Figure 1 (tube, one colour):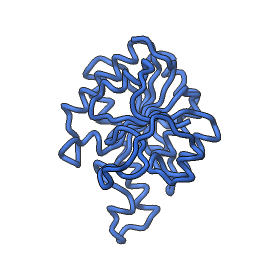
Figure 2 (cartoon, one colour):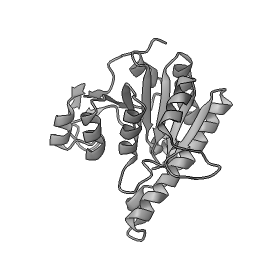
Figure 3 (tube, one colour):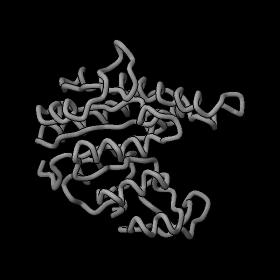
Figure 4 (cartoon, helix red, strand yellow):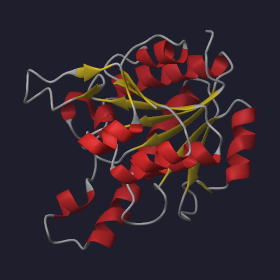
Length: 236
């Protein structure tokens, strides 16, 4: 596969890994995603991954007013670590080398995140999974994805979601919503479009790193984006 990118960070929503079950894992689907990413890595693309935790815990929303925000966010960090472990094992069963690095110390779960070590693993051809978000409460996994992408000098962020791009409104509620092929960060922020949270969007804009938003329902879309096909929405 010929890729227009040398190094990318793929952000995957936790809910996407659950499939129709909504919680936990749909391992048939997870395996398809991992097979696609493995093929990209074997072609020479350096791949890092950040996975959300929504298939287990959605922070304050799931805390239902009973769990304080800091604790709720830390529980979400643990959910992302669980996802990283599961996906890393699927990669390993497929014969790929996958490394889990966590933003907080969890002995036996993964290595403590280190930028230099992450880049070394990527250059060796390992698939690197970043767990536990930024390691700090009040920051989403979207922000963690952009932060890690900037730190490892990724060429682009591939935002794999349950929706096939960026729309002017929620297409599930408004059939008149318009899908954008390209859109600027300034417009995303001005229109308050639900691409990433504003902190993540501003960080990507400040560091001039493009974000390609596309549907993960068909995992092959990952390779299509890497090959330069115009699918989804490019935010730049």
